[in-house]
Structures are given as C-alpha cells and as structure tokens.
Image (cartoon, rainbow, N blue to C red; front, side):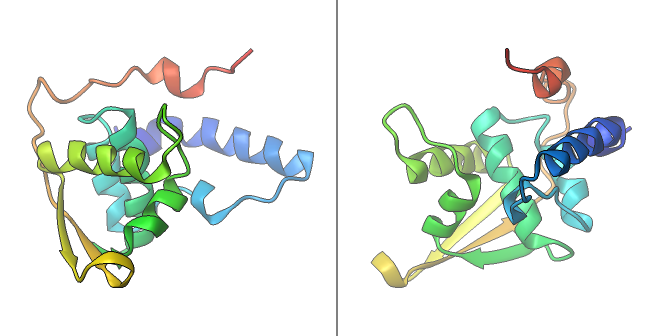
Length: 145
C-alpha cells in the first residue's frame, strides 16, 4: 500500500476544511500526480523531512515526466520552508542533497549565477529494509495545538 493510498482520505478531509475556511489552495499544496507520484511515495520513506519537502515539489513539477528543469530559486520558493538561519535555498539544497545521497535524484546544473538552469532527474533509489518505514506516519497528520 502506497503512502497516497493510505492517507488519501486524510488529505481530502484537510482539503475540504481549507476550502470551507475560504483559503485558496496554492499549486504547491496540490499533491504530485502521474508517474512522479509513485516515485514520491517511495522516496519520502527513505529521506529526512527536508528531502521529503523537496521530493514533493520536484514530483509535482515533473508530473508524467521523469525530469524537470527549473532554477534553484524557483524550487526553493516552491518548497517554502526556511532553515534555522531563515534561508529558503539552503533548506532546499539540503533536502536535494539527501535525495541525491539516497540515490533517488540526479542533479545537473548548466550555466552560472542567475542564468543557471538545473535539471532534476528522478531515479529509483534504495528500497532496502533499513530505508523503508523510516518516517513516522503519526507525525504527518497530527494537529498542532
């Protein structure tokens, strides 16, 4: 059973609550679709939270393809989480590094500075017993008091 199969109902319940409040859902909040959704469901079980957040946005941007080319700044904005020092990009880079180290992602940057374009390619990473089941499912859907 995949992550999305297991928690689809809880995700839909949260989405309904947001709509009732009148908040629009940003594109970044929509879950990944296509073949990248299957990659995402496997990858998030093997990386820390920073890697999970980056994997979600890369999978959402990939859709039915297995690669996406975007600037680092756009990826960092899509992830939208800051590290302790308040930097968006460093958090995204740390999550990307976790995915690369685990074998789930390949990164290739062409160009430099503001004109640089980075291509992220989805890979099938390590699915060993030590890797799977690393995340705690209760942490994902507990309400913050």
